Image (cartoon, rainbow, N blue to C red; front, side, top):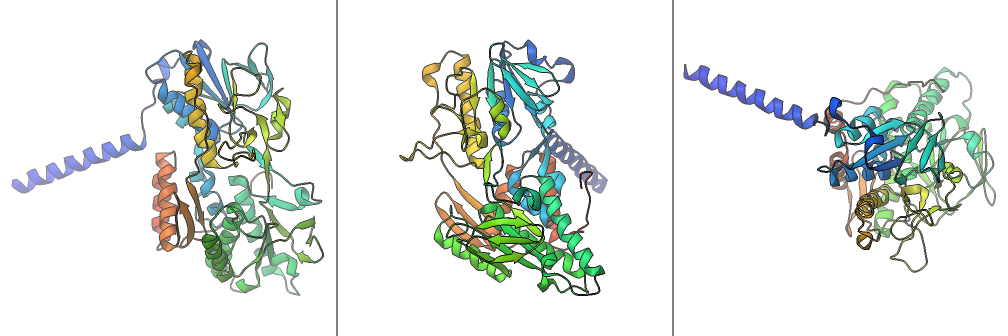
Length: 463
């Protein structure tokens, strides 16, 4: 009898524990579907354009601040109905990360927070009527408007870049890069004669964090995941180049960490070329400024970023290189009620005297989202004297070069190696917004300790 009682208690505890876990992974939304007010019915309508780090943070922070109020409504407009967790995107190249866990459901997260969501692409703003017009002809009213449209690749007018290179700005880009590697190996496996050097040469242009991580993930994909599947191809024939116009890779990091990263890349047989500029890209070659070239049919461009060109059609003051002009409170100049943040905004770094803008990073956009949410609420409540001046506070940078090595700088503390890689994974795992994605990524990483990922070429409809 005692055994039955103990067994029943254990089973009951297990059921309760599973129920608590289920509730934690599937939080209830603020409003039940039948009681959710229409966005247009709110007294103060806040329209957020863009669903990246800045826009998502602004919307969720505003919902948090107004959870006990019924006078503020938040609506997010975005071209995609998913939120891309950018730090993990390079891992998609090597199949270390599943794309579905990087592209997290934006609509569900916003509805749970208490906001509304519409998938739409912005066309223009009617400033007199205070409405945003979408490309589908639908109008969205606002009392406060937050522009957070992000950025896009900057090709600097170099001939052939746009036509012949793969960019690295999205989950789709990472999948296309992986597909290109597999496609080249498939082509070479069918070749009976001499294989052109350009087929198996990959050139990554730009040695910031994205470029360095992409080059390292290419190495992992070829040497660790695909080599067993192509026994007739010597993996060492695959050459990877990393080109940077500045004197150093990862220029934003401490010199000690830069040297550690460069040593790691050297050990991965990745050729690093600094103070080297691409002059032209053709279908089978990268021509270098000052002479010389690299025979390749596989160029990956990570060298530049610029504000989204869509901001030029919104009737707002714009600096071509840096984005929409805003003041220290993130308000658009001469446009009351309109705010701009993230990669599409020209936010001055008040810590520096030379007038430089805040770098277009995820952590900067998140910090701006928090500040603009508080400032919008202060403006709604008539507390203009309480507006918060935006001061960028960099907390460091984490760069992963394979699953067992990273270089990190966090709050002035610098460390590298396997411990840094574990820290990288834990730091970004907890920052994933979707509880389901957290569980799936953690499970994938645990399984990767015992099993290699199954790497396949999945073609999208536009390839």
